[in-house]
Image 1: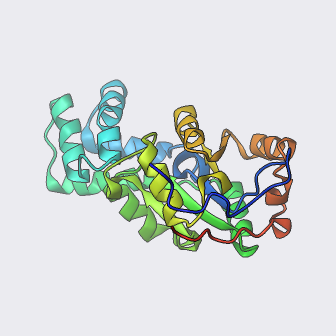
Image 2 (image 1 turned 180 degrees about the horizontal axis):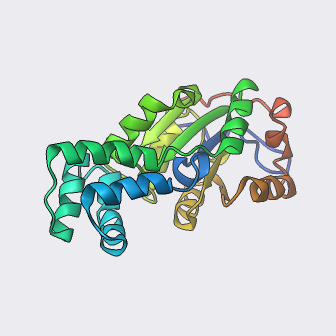
Length: 237
């Protein structure tokens, strides 16, 4: 399907990187750090499950939770059914809180860089595969999320990365053609899907590795955000 913005709205000198008007971040393992082991221990305690069956069941239904096919309550009931346990409403409420804790460890250098971009007037967004209760929990807990120009929480759209449509809808919400978006994600399949619809991409591992790669690829102006070029939002057709 055609993208609903003027693809000729920006230009770059031949041979140079296409100007970036928006930096689009994944949330988990990019803006947040690795899962909190204390929170994982709490989930094990609440469920009474050993590590292996909990780990298997936790991830078995995660994509359906992320894309809104399962609500938070339905997700934990699915985990319980697979592991042959029963969960009370009180336990499920506790699991909601622990799951938010699990994914709330800040990746401080990345949050600081996002804030630097925002102060410099560079548009920023988040595109995250995330279940409804976790999205609600982190938005309530993390005030710095409000500074992003747009956040796509996958469960609310009933789709998830790497489905092409979620990238297209996110670009439209950010009023930025895909070619002028730099997308950072820790999963190769999500990076590949973003590149397929025309976004610039960077596979994130650590802040230090990102710093080196961005400098090597001509994105140093984004690391020093005050020097970033201004890309005006494209007009809708």
